[in-house]
Image 1 (cartoon, helix red, strand yellow):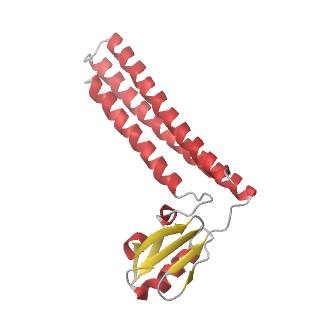
Image 2 (cartoon, one colour; image 1 turned 180 degrees about the vertical axis):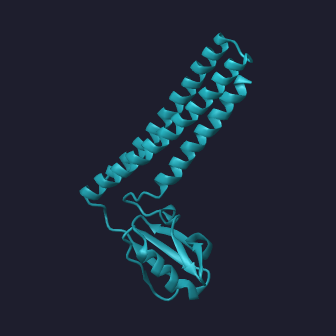
Image 3 (tube, helix red, strand yellow; image 1 turned 90 degrees about the horizontal axis):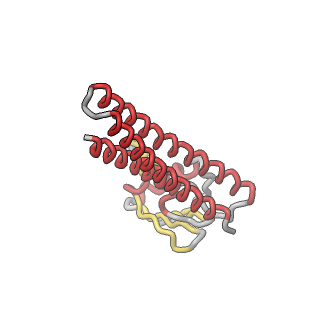
Length: 185
């Protein structure tokens, strides 16, 4: 019973870290990567469609993304969506592909992005702690109902805290790696 609770907590905490990885992939570093465009939605024939479903995206160079639409008629809509995004992109097209050049990040912009990374890391830490709180409540209910003894509850709480600490440390490592990436010139 307790092992199931701890295992469930680990799965939920791992999911929080997975979400953090996904969130940080969309934060722009000095390099162009296709994952930067994961959140771009294109108004394609009246429906909001993810860009990945409309085009192939590659990074042939460190500071350039190349978008090759499957339907050439969608180039205008894709370009419009890229321009309207909050990423300050300046796409250009030649009728067949869209090129997005990425200028090097300024020091001020890097510092702003580090703040964004720290905020996302804090959200992940809060998420991990919320999982811990929920599972602690479950352990307390088991103890209250008499399903487990007070000693077992104490051991389970200690074990849950160790799992939480391990996942918080992973959040710290992921955030620190992204910060290093951002501050790298």
